[in-house]
Image (cartoon, rainbow, N blue to C red; front, side, top):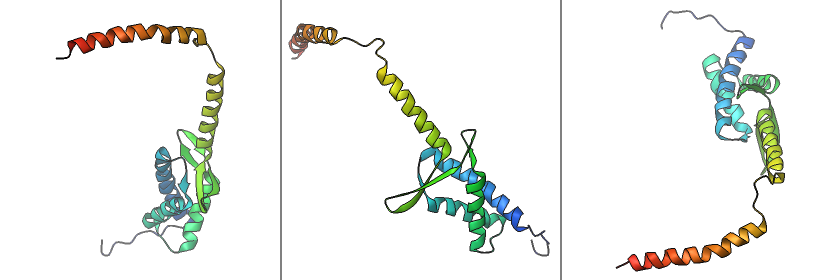
Length: 147
């Protein structure tokens, strides 16, 4: 509004506000992707600074630094960015995603070793051999029912 004076935020306040905005949106990005381009982190930092007050590229660096240092909440846990290069581009994932994938790997190993309820080769062969007559009878019935 014209003539209204707004209090100026300190750099720390601007960075904190932009950090809160950026991390909220990064968590949403990680809901649908395990790996993001580093540019996505920068993009959300910039968008956060639009509302908090952008003064220059040093602001973007400051917010990205906060994201890397403080991490963010993901699936109810504190997650931190993990950087790497893939296909010549800087990419990021997060520590919670790595924990989830390691847990899935552990469970897959355990499941692959559990033979509880597994059929023997002899039982499978017996069923396959026995199914031919059943299949033939069913097929004959079906063929007879056709006009």
